[in-house]
Length: 195
Image (tube, rainbow, N blue to C red; front, top):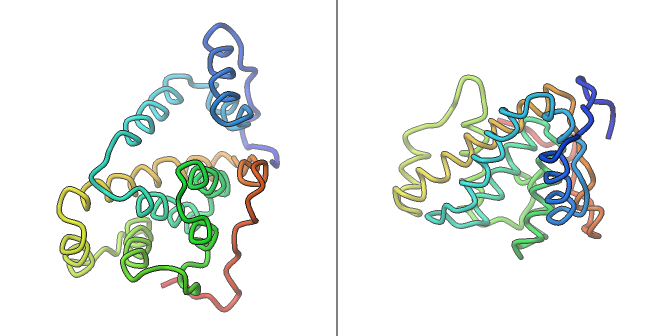
């Protein structure tokens, strides 16, 4: 990882020891980003708490939510979130060939039409201004149902909530996917066009 824009704080105290133990148990290492967010533990706890609550949602397919989060991370340029979600796709037994192709989803032929719509929706929500159309939502509603679309939308919003501060703070990949032997994420070709 390159240097973050705010140097990581030393993770100390009982709470720090607990966090480090949990991270090592669940991720195999303590993410370097934890030290950056340790400067404001209220922010860290709130972001982590919300992320934990999202994991309990079950109205939308886990693969679609993961690919949407990865599409946001790729679009925004958050290497940490992209790597972590690829690692999580492995842990959730999702299709890893698809997960590794998310950064070049427009060029790749591995995705279903629905998966492409979900990633297009994720990017449309991530643009400024937002470019979501009535037609996008109507198609997703027809295929997924209202509860799943609401959940998917909230997951995409959360992805923006986590990717943007990581990029702004200079937090980059910790190599989770490489540590568990996953192939490197695919790279878009120079001719790939973002709409």
